[in-house]
Amino acid sequence: MMLRIKRVPTVVSNYQKEEAEEGGCGRNCLRNCCLPGAKLPLYAFKKVNKISCDNGFVDHVDKEAPVAFLDSLLLGEWEDRLQRGLFRYDVTACETKVIPGEYGFIAQLNEGRHLKKRPTEFRVDKVLQPFDENKFNFTKVGQEEVLFQFEPSSDDEVRFLPSAPIDVENSPSVIAINVSPIEYGHVLLIPRILECLPQRIDRESFLLALYMAAEAGNPYFRLGYNSLGAFATINHLHFQAYHLAVPFPIEKAPARKIATTNSGVKISNIVNYPVRGLVFEGGKTLEDLSNVVSDSCICLQDNNIPYNVLISDSGRRIFLFPQCYAEKQALGEVSPELLDTQVNPAVWEISGHMVLKRKKDYEEASEENAWKLLAEVSLSEERLEEVKDLIFEAIACKIDEDKAVTPTLIEDSTQSIEVPLQAPTLLWSLPSRSARF
Ligand SMILES: [Zn+2]
Image 1 (tube, rainbow, N blue to C red):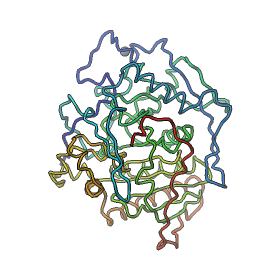
Image 2 (cartoon, helix red, strand yellow):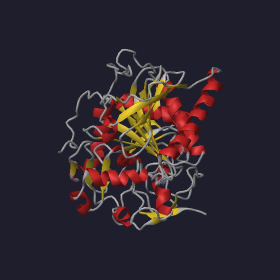
Image 3 (cartoon, rainbow, N blue to C red):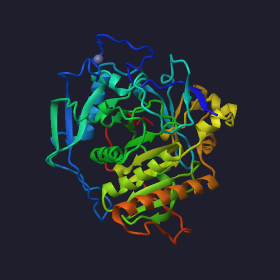
Image 4 (cartoon, rainbow, N blue to C red):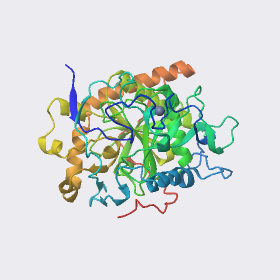
């Protein structure tokens, strides 16, 4: 049986149309028709890999940086595209509120996001699907939607070039606007864009996402990932990111440590939260943390389990949620009242930032309603245990191969103690338009 659901695809680019307009193009896109001679800004980051031992901070503050990555470059360029009218609606005018209660779920009323689109059928029972050249992909966006190229520096120095050629041979990674933003500074990180990779985590791309989080260095700027079957709608590898100056409920949820890998990455169960999942932190290097999480994601993909990832705390803390909402939806097991809201529980909703499409739902938003929706997303306790077994086996195998040391995972004896995770250290807050409550 093939499971499909109908939903309204989110328009992430101004050139995302059903009909292809071939010949001459005229869109100033990133394909062969428009690429020759094209230039884009280039930010080359330093691959700093240490996680300093005293406070767990990624030692990544580079005072020599030629441009402030988040404040000046990313958000500056994003605001420039806002001025130029490239977004489909003004997200800075969307109402947002923190829902009263213990968790502080955040509700946003966003009526513009799904307008003027007919529902399309999405196949939701396959997490890995081949890249399809004929469907919308990010090489079709206009170059004006791309903010800059984001690449590791070749000489270990941070560099910024306001205008750099696009090296087609070494497919660049780029940061582009999402034309249907859900918050201030909503962008897409598209690893090696010209390689046309399908939506699928690999070690190198996940590490790139962590470097971006570390480079931004602001706990209010988070990255997220949705797999196919967990509300990604474009099968071209991408991460999302935006700035929102409040802690997310998931970041305040307690966690219980269950294992530590050889490389020092701590794995915990999230507790007292409607969606069951795992949180990863620590490790001797950023790459250690990245590899453990990406190997876990690869395991889920290989086992056809849809999932979402939140990269929090400037890349130091990563949440992983296997989920089953789309599957339940396709099987007709989700209640009509939840379906009526048309809320797609992707990474942001799961993290506690609820993007609501109807005024009624916004006005009636309560912690109870948010909880009810998110509980439908979660795997059962028994199923999560099975999934964890798969993940732990996969991580152990991977680390065995790399380091030839066993056993990799040490079951922790402190299982009965609930340790609330530290709230993210709030370094500074930007004079952001998103802080409106
Ligand atoms: Zn073109």
